[in-house]
Length: 126
Image (cartoon, rainbow, N blue to C red; front, side, top):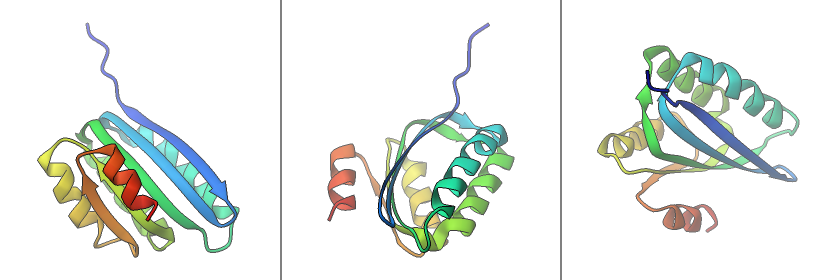
């Protein structure tokens, strides 16, 4: 029997009303993964009036979502979508670029896909 890795790791840095959120997705994300991560994001952002968030999402080890987890991701985007200034998604799969384009419809800030972490960080810091 092999161990199947999945989940989200999160880093949150704050400077005044500005946040830098880094997420690394591994495997196929589940509803339980979002039950863990969503309260952390909610709590960090609720502490500041009108937070401005830049996010870096590492999808290089991500395989996708379970259906309920995809819904959780959508709800999280709707809840905090107007707080995101920029979201950089970097990965190595075609569907991730398409996901970034669809995600841009629900986020008030910019969403871009990158194939290198360095280019994603450069864009976020512009």
